[in-house]
Length: 357
Image (cartoon, rainbow, N blue to C red):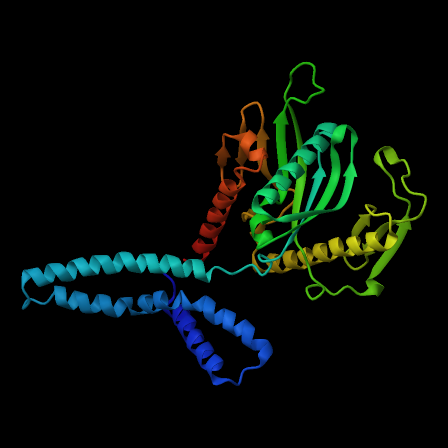
């Protein structure tokens, strides 16, 4: 049961905002923020008011039901109303619980997606490439834009690492559950005995940080320049255009060599660094709030094995929610991303709701 005082605070906040917005004395900068908050509250207020009135309405109906002076027909009507009132109150409570789930401030941001080949050698790099292509297809279907920030290729068309920026509406909210270790089980094209090999790639999804989110001091940076190199380590540039940026206080290092221009590489490197620092601070804050963060869906723990892609059996299984889709080919084409994501979101919401009980 949600504490009634918590619901009353929502109603009081709505009335307070209404009074402020109609006074004409609110600062222009605050007006847009408070107008949005007021609009967001509008839908939940009728539900909140019904919820706070439940006990009084229930009491009135019980008095009527227990009144020996009324006829049986009226008593039956009151009993039916009480049953309906209890059912509706439960629905209202669930709606209020969803509303009270703490909002992730990063949900509305764009996302930087980092994919790296893990254990498994060449097969792991080929799988990393397959994962990128899958996300690329999801972006095209949803009309999101995707831009490669950094790429490091391996032999046979594989990827050692690829970092991309995905832009659109509420991108981080849609992709944040992809962070973790993705494991693949399949027969590599180089396998002559038909044996199934297991390899992995890691995915890290970071909210794109703006200048206002993270302030980076020049004194906290060490910037080294070097010559770009391609697969096998051969030099692909005659000038020192590649950049390595080290954030001294945290030890976070970003290398960028995708562009021929040192200035562009530095700009892209700082974009990645800013998002990693933003996520670093978010993780520190979340760890203080919850010691069991690693047990949460979407904790962002890159070492957590989250999903297995089993090609011989044609299935993809998410281990966090024990959910399996038996249409792996379609999933890799980006067709069933929403089905997986909706199930993850539902489980995450239920976990948060349970904390409110």
